Image 1 (cartoon, rainbow, N blue to C red):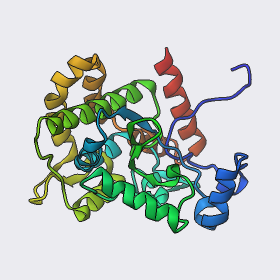
Image 2 (cartoon, one colour; image 1 turned 30 degrees about the horizontal axis):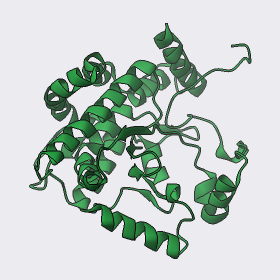
Image 3 (cartoon, helix red, strand yellow; image 1 turned 60 degrees about the vertical axis):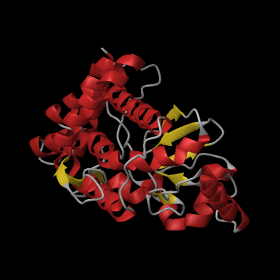
Length: 289
């Protein structure tokens, strides 16, 4: 308030132009633009990164691959980027599909063992695809310097209540999967083509997406599956002290995810995108109390 600035939480700004934005100083971003050119310059997008500590590197890759089964749940709940450069894209998350255009971005490879990941990184460094490990920009990736599994699926989030809900869901999922893996269970995974299709469906349709559940190609409405998932995770949430936050996950589709709320304002105001931005700003203010 003292600086006369507002805070906006979303995967994209509805009418900001990437051509007029200043680039953050530093070699990392300069090199990104130098290499990626047009695609890199227009990355006026925002996502959320959530780190969950992993007790053993030997379980990182199995947990990562199993976590991809829940990619559409997280994408649909957080989708907040329906409008890009003044145009409704028809997608719940335009950010998700824009970001994957960058080299090394997008869905991760599904390695079975940590040594396979190390060999991949070595190849990337040797061939100059990356200069440092953090230039692997997967939607879910090992963050080696932190000892964590880093979840980067979610769009920018519009309220702190929703942020708490999504973080609780991500935290519980990783702990739940890791404990099952540590107990000797072979975690369920899906083939990459199902994971890729689920990403597209959740980016396109959000909480209305019918997603693929398993390698047997069974399908279900994402919000129906989410309701059962929250029940499965309740014991984990109780142990982690985030039961209330996990329960709040189910409030998001009831209220309407951010992309739904933004579109409702646009429709109500005859396409006034300033009103859309104002509504998101006010949501955050109201949520802060």
